[in-house]
Length: 542
Ligand code: C2O
Image: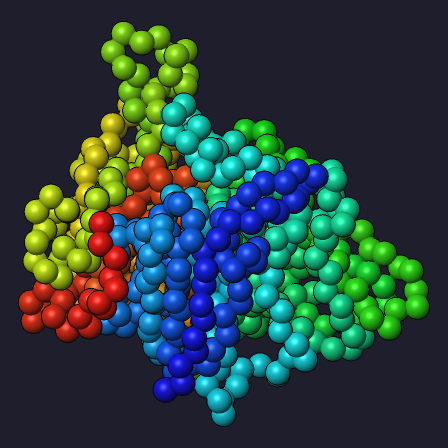
């Protein structure tokens, strides 16, 4: 086992974008943060020294953490935060996975500026299931606010409404030339005529699904969420927060400069709030004597759900020995509604004083709005001291059956709770994720920690049992984050073979904050989690 050591100092530094300078929290003064590279089978060791006043935790998005849940990172789920002036060393072996993942802070919107690529190369001696590219390039898509992100969050929480939309999308931290005062902040990738490039694309945006494409060039999708998929050619990809997608492209056009660009997808925003907010970078042919400059890539319109469905339907898992096969038989059926709620107006308050249709926004799964506890759920579960931390009664069904995607008859005020669901180790699990229309908003990118899952079906309307007959049990996509379509559903399957305490949540950060979260606990049957490693000596305390 080779050990790869990184030291991450959480610091503050001044960064200027769109002609204004602000102080951001980042790692080692870098924005985006350092790239991590290792081979499948290596042990990753990251010593995090918190040198800022704020609390921090880091999460390794998509890493299984087999029996090392202490290092998973979501605050108050698997650990207490690393407090100012303290350190914590994350230390885990990366097994049975290879591809593009990423790391990000997992506490209170800190991930807006604290994130980076985590690239797992195939084991020495093995290779990609496609011709080796000439070069590999991480493309991190992000979101930039001119004001302090914690202030944006606080303001949203105080008002009960949605947060201010970001001022720019970014490619590798740079907004690109289409924004005012951003002409020099452009990501440029130099390419050579005839060569093939593997772009490792990561959606690190806080609250926005994105389209991405390159003018005049076809993309070949080969991987999603660090699982190989059957290659297919496309002009654009769709990528939701949390997801990664690897694409190949060949520099086979007239030498010149070509735009790459990313723009927002939002299923149900009444008018386009993202108008003209397209982030662009440049693919520049090195040997170029010509001054040819492309137009922008033709990306779908911001609300083109048809293009989203068409892209997702092309994604099929690659049948290779390295990847698991989809469970055909199911032992546990879970049904989770995912969506936003609006609290009722306080009694006597005029509707106008509370957001028109109701009060503050909240979000829920099975109508439970997740409330973060004050200490680590994993710590409490491991030591069997649940009291005052969480309960184990999260329901596998919504409390009321209703027309989830029709016009709601009334708001179902959600109940607050810190609840987890126990799933017996080794069981074969199907989860139906049903979007609700209590508040019509957008698709929800649901991410499960600790696992990849097969997406065996998805569609619009209310889920019906008879749909099971048409599930893809041959080559479904294998991912760690699924976009549950607005007014629609998705069906996922997994084998619960990774004991631990696993956060499951919407990866739109404002929805995470509003409580679109729950916790699944996979037990090994030998008593509470005794088969996982003991907590490390520097495990943070609350
Ligand atoms: Cu990418 Cu719970 O996170």
